[in-house]
Length: 570
Image (cartoon, rainbow, N blue to C red; front, side):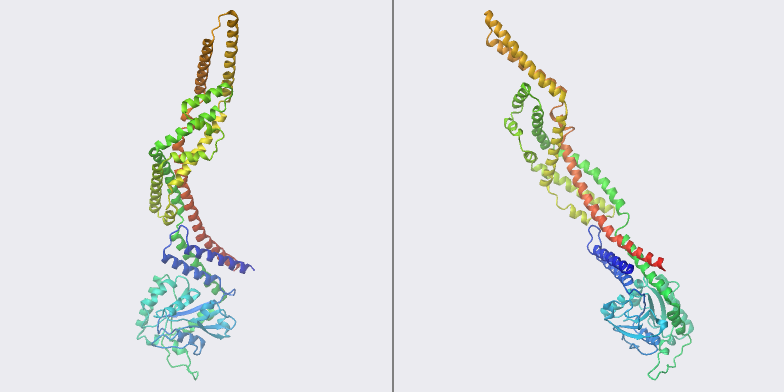
């Protein structure tokens, strides 16, 4: 059950890695890098998702005429694969396997291209010898079959002939394949080597080439495979060479490769696959990405603040017009908090001061949704163009920062491709609206005692004037010295002077005009919108980059955990 769960988690991890390699969100991956990682993913599938009982696949690989088919016939002790000296004859895989090992580590696709020969030799239990098409074959499908088999092989016996052991078409494949599987070299047809010195030179050349590939201690066997293949009558040909390591090669395959050694070779393959996958992922998406991105984000935030200040200066005139439209609304909002005769006086002054009879009418019971429309209509087309230009400039500047820090820029281009000036003006309008509402709330919380005192005085003093006027007028009427309208005008003048004095006192004690918006509502709103837009871009970019890195790295953690679990169970 645990094994099935492990395989399931590995399957999902590799699918996740493959999907992200093919369709990254932010990370830039070239086609050649995709192909390389996909080949490594296929190796991982081959190494982990095979049969539960490990079967070591021993591949016989080499160039045309090297004698691979003759060698597998020698192992079998009979002719199971057709051989030829002058042309490639192995067009399909030839598998020599124990009768209880079934397909071994071959996939169904590879099995469909193979001929199977079963045996019951216990010394080859859990080992499958596979003859492959030539590495230097001009048939693309033949080379593809061989490469697919090498991905699933735990041990590769590279077979060479003295005539063509330095063939570049063969070594070009070995440079990649020897990184992942255990390997041994076989120099076949040593009976054709003229002298011991020539044999030593060929051996030294092979060892040097393998050392350059990281196999300094590779085992090299000298064989004359034909000498070990009986003819139709069961007799061996008389081709004994001076040097022949067939006994040592058999001992290596049949006895040295026991169960624990097979497990070690397979584990080594898996380690190699993880190491190469980790190296490729680190190259595609270095761990330093986030450190660099945070530095870019810091610089971008600072520049966004500067850009907001510049933009506010560019559109200072329409912003001032917006504040000029909003200040009367705040004045009226505050004056509505007064009561009594003084409130009536303030309303009359508002009408005279602003000439906004219509504004006064709309502000009482006025729908809040109308205010952003008023702001947007004030911020004209020139302001929209300025906003777009500033944000496009910011997008280019940050893109240059990303490029300088070797961060991918394609996703950034997609995020910042469409800068909508109308939408941004709408955001600025909403920000100004929010600032207006905040200022209104703050006004509602300020100067309650002053408002109460002024409203009280605004009611008491006029009432006192009325009482005094009535008293004087009644007294003068009975005394025959009635002043008439003159007294009324005097009282009215005194009342006006009183209200003016009271209004002046209130304006001194309570802030008024543009001071109600703080430092400046318009520039603050512009700076916040520019900063927020840039921050949203960066956050979207950061989110996509994080998702890519998680999808690229977490599958490797699953593979590493599975490998550690195997080691702990040994």
